[in-house]
Length: 391
Ligand code: LLP
Image 1 (cartoon, protein in one colour):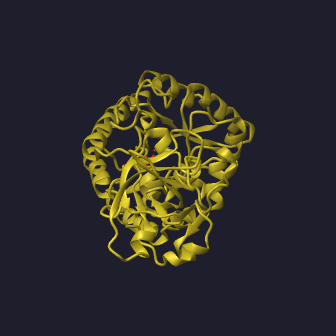
Image 2: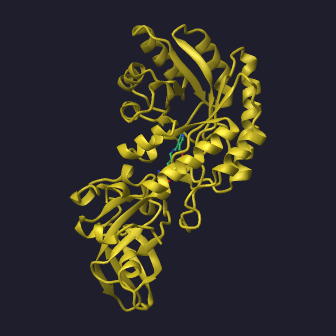
Image 3: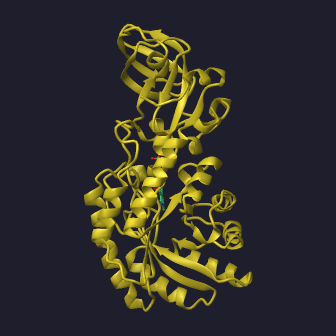
C-alpha cells in the first residue's frame, strides 16, 4: 500500500494530482550513486521520464548528469542544476534552433543519429565559432523483448545509424574541424525486465561494434549504453527500487572497457517511476448486471500509458485502507476514467476494497512517463504535482 504520512492532508487538495514520495526518490538516488560509483559507471538521468523541477534538482544534487531529447529539455536540465557539460543531447530530429540552444548551454555531447545531422551540427558549430562534441548513436539491431512501441534498437526502428553507415559517419566527422569525436551511444528499448540476458547481449554487440569502429582511426573514449532498466509495476511495495545492482554488474562483467574509456548509462523510468503516484477520487460506483464500474476523476489525459501501451498500473483504494478500519470486503471493478474514449480504462476486473463515492484511489508507479505525457483532452486541467516534503 502506498505509504503516505497523512491521508487527511489529501482532503484539502483538488484531485487528480501527482503525488511524489521524495524520501523514496532520495533513497533511490543514494542507491544509484553507490552502485554506479562501485562499478565506475556515469549516470545521466533521461529527463524525458519526468521534468518536475524538485525532482530534477534532487537528481542533479546527487551528482548525476542528464540525457535530453529536445532543446527545451537541455535548457530545462541546466536550469535545474545539471552542469551543461554533463548534459547529453539525443534525438532523431534536432532542429537548427535546438542545436544552437544546446551549443549555447555547452552540452557535453550531441548524440547524432544521421549523416545529414553530422553536417548540420558541424556547420552550426563552425558558424558560431564553437567545437561541438559528438557521439554516434548506433542501432545495434537487438530485440529488447519489450513492448513494440518502446523497442528502439532494431533495424526497422527510426533510431541511430546502422552499422553499415559507420565508416561514412567516421570519415565525415574526421573532415569537420568544428566537431570533436567522443564515442558511441546505444539504447535498445525501455522497461526491460530480462535484465541479465538482454543487457549481456547488448554489451557483447557493443564490444564488437566498438572494436570494428576503431578501425576507422577514431578512438572511442565514451561508450554510452542508454537506459531501459525495467521496474516492478506489479508489486511496487516489494520492489520500490529497481535492480540497479544487476544491471550495472552485468555491464561491468560483460563490457570491454579500457583505461581511456568512460562508460555512461541513461536511465529514466527506473530513477523516478516508483516515487510517483496519480491520486484520484471515485466519482461514481456504477453497478451493472455483469460488471461493476468504478469511475475515477483521473483519465487517460492524465496518464496515457494504459490506453497507449496497454500498460498495467497497480490500483489501490487509500480511503478504505487508511480511513475505514472495519473489515471491508473486496469487490471486482472495471476501473475507468471520465474521458469519452473506450480505451480510457485503468484496469478491468480489478479486485479492490469495496469502494465508495469520494474515496481516494492511487494509481501506482506513475512517476515516469506520466505527468510528462499528459494532455488537456476534453479540456480537463493538467493534474498538478504534490511533493511529500510539502504536506
Ligand atoms: N536513452 C534514450 C536514447 C531513450 O530513448 C530513452 C527512452 C532513455 C534513454 C530512457 O529509457 P528508460 O530508462 O526510461 O527505459 N513512454 C514510454 C517509454 C518511452 C521511452 C523512450 N526512450 C512508456 O511510458 O513506457
